[in-house]
Image (tube, rainbow, N blue to C red):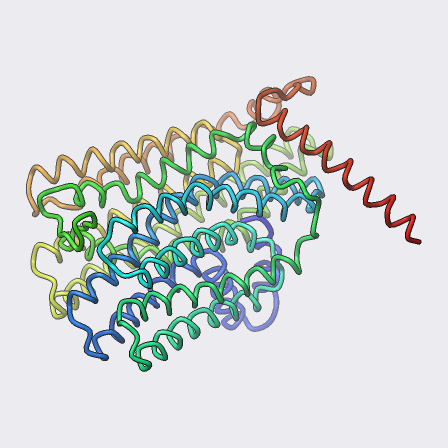
Length: 494
């Protein structure tokens, strides 16, 4: 989350402590989980709006199907590049190369749209729906893909109040447009999807305005990120594996005999997906708390440690600040897990009973209770992986993601065979085992942190080779030539 720490520190240092805390956590929530929260709000409210306008159950089921598929698969595709983009933006800020940020945004977004839009369009052609529904679903998928990429950039925007206004504007626009279309007599499914798509388009445009105000225009080389992609290619694999681990257990049940067919080529598993959806909501406080703790407390001790190294600190000083950094890290993790454990227990005790009153049966409620703790441990895995990347342990982060993906899919296959009363236990086991492995890896890495810092860096600059590096260098040369010619033309005009 490059850049957000500066603002969060300023917020928590100033003004009344309660108001500062509310404002700080609100900013962290919007910047880290804003589009996800917006998706959930829009889905729930539009589903109720369809019911209020008399839409049959089949239409509401199809609406949930389209919203779920566009969110899951756009996020899976975007996850391939998000970890890399966070690292690339951090490098641009540190090396004062902000001119490369926006061209990279355009390049990465174009690449993802080029890969995802044709596949999504081909799939939508297999569904027996009208062209209005197909176009709305495709637009929603493409807009979400761009918004997920924007989130990597918005963390460095300093005007977070405008980001919050963009979030609220997108929410109001989605609900208002859907209501207007339904009142106008448009087909209910098309109206709800167009409302959601255009609402997220409003969010995209408002966020884009903030990006243009924050980052310089830069050059014309949209593939400026290719050399960095060659260097950090393991982050792409890590993002893919984390996405498979997060949604792989759902895919297992989509392929099982328990699945429901909304369309001949469109399936989902209501008895598993509904509990998983509600359980996912319980980890939002944990993820927000992690960002706040990481960027306001841990980052200070982390910076003090490396300042002691870079600016001539004595060995005793380096060891002292290292111990303080470790204590802060473990204290933040403990505080985060304690808070989430309380949230999970409250969800199991109260929300589980509430869900039974709105139609979930005993098996679904039991699955929800298991998945509450499963997602709690998934949060530990995600936060631990981010911490490994914070210390540049890319190999450890990739192994953690691979272990989690394998155990999530494998454990879900086992519980599927054992019967509905064990559902969710596979995901819970994946989170527990991977969480333990991540904490162990983090501890071992910190014990040898001086070795990694002092001994693993090359003594001399290594030449960067590879197809992507050569392509990036060639495009950079072309960009410089065009820049020189443009400068000469401007001088001639003068």
